[in-house]
Length: 325
Image 1: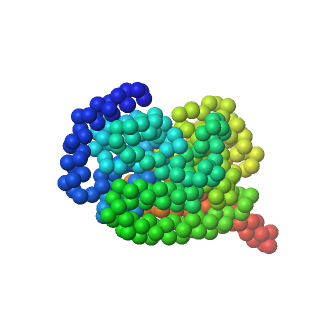
Image 2 (image 1 turned 45 degrees about the horizontal axis):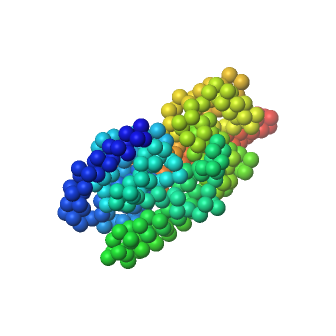
Image 3 (image 1 turned 135 degrees about the vertical axis):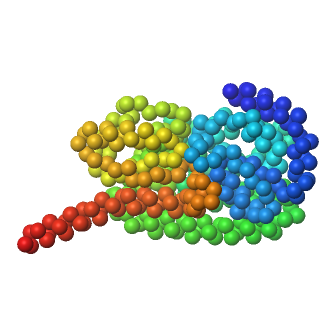
């Protein structure tokens, strides 16, 4: 598949290079293509009115399994700049993007600009890093700096504008980081256990004090087996975890299988709501932005994990009232 994508891209470049240059000159904006919505959101905030941004992967799309279409390849070859996450998030497409520089198309892997000392290794492949860096807001701020630098290099005439936009956005992300810290602090430390469909939240767990368990590995290419389901169910029962979470880009049946296995062991665990992991929400919604997505996730997690405490408090009050009578 990778060989086919690369061969198709090379052909598309040869056939469409002139059209790309003409399009860029016509609208007087940088024509930017990104892979994920999270990367696109950075480019929109830093680029402002100077960029036109197209994200290949929309709401609910899993970048680990994404297969580029013919239309995608033509969008890529027409771009002035291509931004992607990197760290193997985009799998085969990521390898194609790496090689595109050989054809004179600038591609930028924003997550690979992050200090390697801050990255987490993939437990299954110790020589690779976990690519889900956007769940630690402070790490994602380093990706913002990488986007800013690339835009300035491509369009130095408007460097001051990119600098100002990036500074303003980074201030918003500082506030977002503090918001997540404050929300997380509402949950007692022993209750901060996050169970999701795949291991996308380890950066979140490290940054905000949560123990994280996923049914699947870091990549959703590895399908969970019955033993994986039973092992996670046993952990939930042992720790008496009140809620587990669905991800919008992973089939809900995977986490429902865990819920059923938990119930078979005599414990009831709720579905605590949907989290955005590898894709943001629909455009025009709060969750269709990086900041809105992060706020939705932490609010959903905290609300579901605290619900048990509220239920227990109500139960304790009721018991006390009955005893008094």
